[in-house]
Picture (cartoon, rainbow, N blue to C red):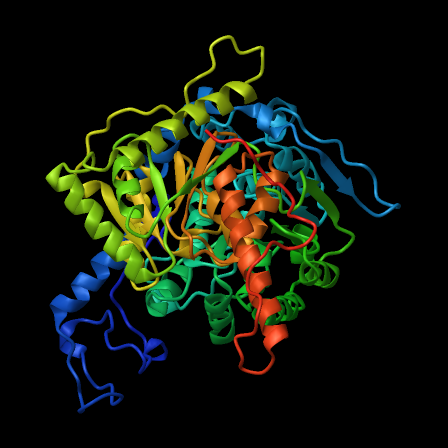
Length: 606
């Protein structure tokens, strides 16, 4: 995988194949020694087991995929700044801090701190086509550069990666922290150098770790700063060897970093910046104990600093970024952060207002036809299913339909409903476009699209990391038109060109709905989510969805209101019958409308 940054791939290709005895672990069935030295691991069936050379070579080819410049900036090359509607960033911003701390003026333009920005960072920002600072960047960059801890809550797609990496790069260049580290050595397998990063970024998933590492590579290109990434599911041997070849910024998942700290692969003596990205997700995944242990080890390592090192590095600066602010996050922030500046962008937990949310009535038998026909009329689509089996089945069906050119073979009712949806989307865009724009761009336009079976990909937990990364990369570069996923892709992934998020299956919780649709409408672009609703949906999620749509001023179709009212009536009647009959009896009255009537949530139809 992408353990090497683009700049130092030469070190990777030319590294020694030497092997030292302390690097030999019985848990690894293969080693990178010459084939004549294989065997001797008395850990499996038989003694002196020999691993076939060709299998190891195949494994190596999958593990080493250093991103080149044309790959690093491929996503940026597809960005049209004209499609970014910065009016969606006009959201309320609140900054809280202790009374004895000064107000830190926000930046409004890159030009305000261009004079303190090294030339390589200026060039990389231009190459990434950053036009304006997002609200989180306007406040986080000056506060982080000033040396304060940051607690930031902002919706997904608001530019959080750049918000914590830009001040880090500014300070690394200003403080000349590279003088503390040794240059990478060719024969590191013999020297056994320990990785001593300046920055540790914790991410909850492998995909998010790779995404943050890519952002660091993009912003630090040609700077001499080494960014490494490590996570579970891949060879720890390969990752540890790469880390020991030099590391300034380490992006990792909590479990793998804890392992490397305990093994002595990583030393936190020089760590100046500790970033917790998507902290609420890490807590949901149960990483809180790992995070606390990592921080305790980090503080112990820093006790070994010399006086000169303390002068250069200073105190540990911690930043915590989260989309929500539950009680657990508040507790962690009090324990980890020192007098932080709390930056709140917009309303916590509110889905982006630049996402138009559409509900379509479907049945189990018509959902597939909806997707087939919709795919022939739209741009890139990210489709969410409940199960891995559903993902694989839908991918196979779409590939077959694309190959056989049968996407248009659906009944007229489906075609009419989708055509009405496109008319509704165009009206929504026209209503939301500022009057200063004379010719609003048609973001959601129905148009015939040429399709082939190679335009469909999948991502779920049963796929290898290499397959998942390859499909995500193909989707980002628009080689894939449709990516079908389980909820493994719902949090944090930056997929900037997604036009539509499709909820093929309704999520179990409203939080999952918000995170799913947050994959579109990112970084100021317009987006659309389409949810296929069937009669057997949970009443609880349907009710929560009403509140979410009302919160975002979205249309609630009358048929949805009728469907929810029917479920409510049936449940009330069933409960009343159970109370009247008692025991296991079916009871008496099972009909009727709840007294007092129901709240009317929506009346308009397309």
